[in-house]
Image (cartoon, rainbow, N blue to C red; front, side):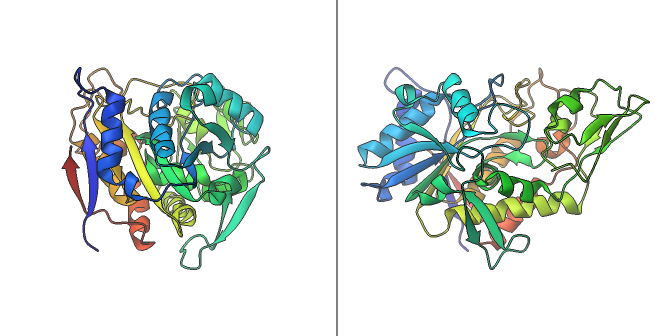
Length: 368
């Protein structure tokens, strides 16, 4: 497979071109205008952010993208699927309210919000994956599958279960219905370092499935029979006492995410955009965010989600660590994502994405 092209621009601007205009130029240069959008239903798959988190993408970017689609004659809508865990995005009503609260309303973005898997997360489509290594059937939110064109609008960041959160994570895990998410997470169950646990109980409050409890010794315990592997407990533990399983379980989950992405994108035009800014240590699913690990780098776009994720990872790893972040003073050995979450291997999703012919990790970065 020949190298993919990833188009990139930084966040510098001038009086003659603001950032939203620069974003429009990136979309044109990267080829979104070459996709037939006229009279097409266009799903813009994004993450609205858990209320309390301020690292999610500004809705202004969604508006610029929606305006581009409408100028080409398309009919855009913003979408995401419901979550598994405690929070305000586990059913469509709370999810839409959260999106509006964070600024993603039809009045601010120029398009509607449609929750992909319906009111309770049960409205999905079973997509066969005969070439899947880990998944033979994927459960994808119906609204996402009903679209004619899919555009992923990603906030590139760290993630406690997958190392990186980019295009593959946004489409694969994010596009899965509630039962799809459970199927992807089911191979991973966090473990507790009892010596580090101080019995604060944060994990018990975050667990939506009663898998985390405190014993008589005030030490956390995780019941693998109840745990769905969502990783919320990992993100909220201030003592790093909870961690992912090492090795094979994480590899399996990464593979499932790549295969779910294949279920979403196959058979129709797709386009992918990532913003490498506010690169937080954890997912935007938490009701908080920490100091970014690196400074704001720029925005990138490609027809290839694998190349886009690899390019954004490389851009972050080439940047100096933010001296105010939790990685300050640590030797990242050229990989801040593995340093931040050593139990993860972001490379596994990239490798499975290549095997599933989603794209290639070999790319040419064209700066505009």
